[in-house]
Length: 219
Image 1: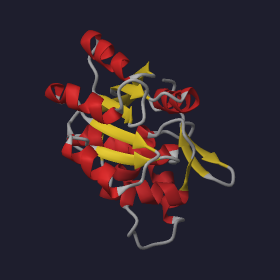
Image 2 (image 1 turned 180 degrees about the vertical axis):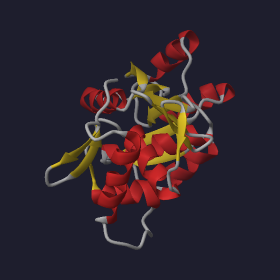
Image 3 (image 1 turned 30 degrees about the vertical axis):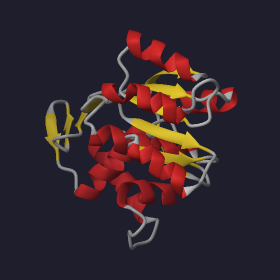
């Protein structure tokens, strides 16, 4: 997975974000003021920055201007919803922009998109005797290729990237197949059964009562 720098001066929000990053397997660093960003970037490799716009001492836009030469992907986080601010952020090189308050699942999904776009983070995932190769869209069980449909692979990738987080059927449909998917949400159940059977993950992919599913993996 990726090493992510979370720059947010509200400690409760910073803690919430980093807790969920850890749950899905990312590593992270924390900063609460603009100048701290430069110190952290000097001493460690960073794959992505989650950057609050309203920061003490230096705001997020000023920070972006000073780190532009490093070409580290940035997702701006802000309570401002003005078009002018969004345009300014993108003109400074932001890869994405999310407005407070936000759902943590939406933030994780946006992180995944930016990381895939830049081909950051690991290119594979291994758990038990299963290896998932994202770039090749290939799954191996005991080093033997397993035939997954396109829908099954997309659903598996969402479960892995959001592991240890309970996802409703609706959220799985949204993240895996998009808002415009036409079909009953119960189709997720069919694909989950197939994944459990093909991967031998009957105990890994848990059914969460009255919600949906969760892939349980020790980080």
